[in-house]
Each structure stands twice: as structure tokens, then as C-alpha cells.
Image (cartoon, rainbow, N blue to C red):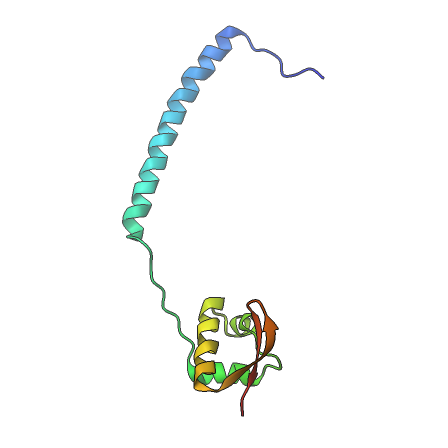
Length: 111
């Protein structure tokens, strides 16, 4: 039960002076860091990563069940990149949908 002890009034005044000075320095440094990060980043970076068709085909041939997540893990790319690669392969007729549900599609390599 009980709580923290009450400190003397004199020590509270000393703590307030030191904390206000340090908090104003912290606020200035935080705003400066934000401005520096905005200047250096220059907005969003566009990263264009594409899977080469030969490397993608090799990875697909070694897989029993082709999923977007497994392809991304094997090639070391993001899932969005692997998903776009599989969709282009599907439009070309190299891969066909074998099953799956709700975004977890399973594909099959067409020979």
C-alpha cells in the first residue's frame, strides 16, 4: 500500500529547473534530427527489384508446391516482387493455379 515518498519543496524546484533546460535541449535536437532526415531522404525511395526469368525458373523447378512466400524465401526478395513474378509467369502460361484460398495460392509448373 502506500506510495512514493513526498520530497521536500526545495528539491522539487531544483529538479524542475534542470529538467526544463534538458527537455528544451532534447526538443531542439529532436526537431533538428527530423529536419535532417527529411532533407537526406528526399521523400520515398523507389526500389525496383526484379527477378530474372532464368533464376526464377530454376527456383520454381526445384519446388514441389509453388507459393509466393516460398519463392520469396528461396530467392531472397520481398513477397510483392515474388507475387508479381508469379503473376507474369501465369499470364505467359508457364505456371497455373492449382489450389489455395484467400491470398495463399498454390501454383503448379506447366511443362
